Length: 321
Image 1 (cartoon, one colour):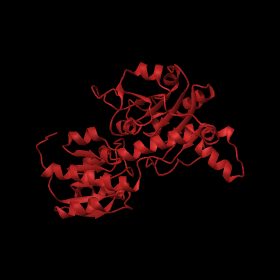
Image 2 (cartoon, helix red, strand yellow):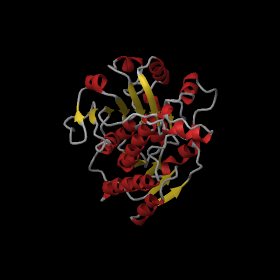
Image 3 (tube, rainbow, N blue to C red):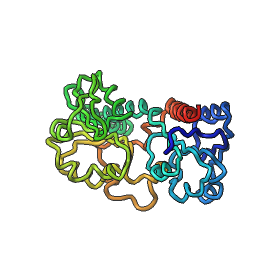
């Protein structure tokens, strides 16, 4: 890619709903912005050559076919962090910038990870449901403290580091591993090797992108390496975890409980679970009192929607200024 190439302020297509600050600021600096939130992928292919930029979340997969037709495209702006629905490698070969905004929801994900961990370890969801059904069970809902435990973070990027920062007041030991980073240890986390995570952690939290390398990285072999039972958190992507393996680990008492904001069975747009018969492993999670679930909302706060859009604007602006 020619990194000296400057994008031309021209037509930008929005195919997903985003905070209006992005459209407003782009228009203020000379872009023509068009929203087509109901456009189909075939229609997008027909119109691909009309735009120099496209703003997307996860509604479509922008593949080789799209990029071959998008003759004038200069950038793709992905609201959020994951780029798994964009063939960024092929786009780069055609001198198309692929930009995302993981900084925009790092705080939201860090807070959510802490929230579901507290809910899990203190039986908050279970107790709430019981009280609503007339049960007042105190001893059965005795919880555990984070203080004094070792928390292992796998993936120390925006969300992993945000989670570590929020744990700093809990008097816990935080250790972290990132295959693609070194020298990141600081007052919030100690940089360690993978074996240290498996040997020392009482709690493991996943903060990795979904790539060919991380797809189902949490599998039977992963859980077999654990030196002791753990609490497990996933706020990254559902397909990072093999759900059957997680269920087996729970049944074999390798995992005490799990807090999951994402599930393997989500649709590609993350808006719902895939239709069809519910898998047995998902039924097991739903019916297990030691599981806390949320519908892929860790990074979706009112504040993060603005931040995601504003960060993306700043990156687009920097390409031509």
